[in-house]
Image (tube, rainbow, N blue to C red; front, side, top):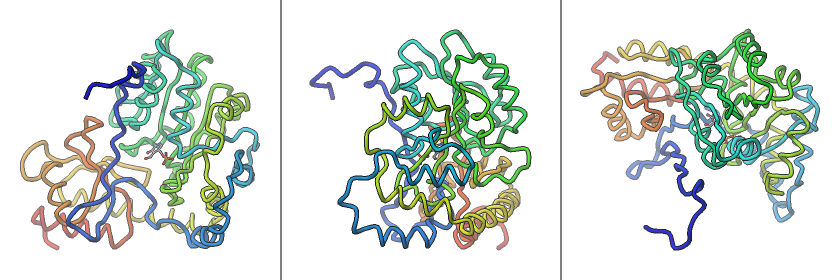
Length: 366
Ligand SMILES: Cc1ncc(COP(=O)(O)O)c(C=O)c1O
């Protein structure tokens, strides 16, 4: 349809974010393993606080999310004034792109990087530049070689979604030392809570040491609060100050603030979730191999799986079959990974059911 009014050229060309599907028309009960939401949902403590808080929702929320920032500052031993909160980390990523780039500038992200990065670049009117991965991993060499005079921002998810690979502390440290100081490095650590590797760092240490690094985090994954839309970032103070001018005044709703405080202090829920993830990440990876498929080794709460390009066992055919059984995985055509599916680590029952159904389809003994 032609537009009645002329729309800003940069905005008009934005490609809409395609979320994974969450419902199947014919099935009442679905197993949803498509969006990497935590296996256990929200904790019981969050359930309780939401019930108690309900009577206060007629009030405007604290525009500074002070309570939440204090909880995060205490938990991570960082300064409250260096924390910003967003309506999901998506809001923070998009706002950062608008704050630090403009038409004519370039923003780098990996070819299998999170889809919000090119969208954030488009929203800012900047040019998104795809950087080639090597073996499903962000290649810092390729990133470095893609830097031009126009480069303003580099988005790197660590660990990366949808591949599940990660960069270690030293790799990132050396990269920050090498890049020009006028380029902003955004380390998107949405899955940081899941990582048990000793050589992994979420990026907090890098933000402390540098004026051109931001680390973003989310409550959508291990904390199970995706529906409340809550993300945060740890950044140099001057960036926090600008961010707070640019964001909408009440970008974090009060239910999210209350839940976030409880979630970040609920250590036993976190430990339980982490234990579960460690065990079932290993289990699922082995089961995928037994099916004759190729899992990409992951450190997060999902596994990328490679399927044969064509025929009965292609990602497309297997996905249709799974949907007919009420099981939703993430298709990845929008990442140019047509013959892959991504599986989130769900509950024990969900994963056992998935493997049982797959074994029937692949004609393996059950
Ligand atoms: C790497 C990465 N960053 C950011 C996000 C967005 O998270 P939020 O729900 O906080 O917007 C996701 C969600 O899938 C993600 O995978």
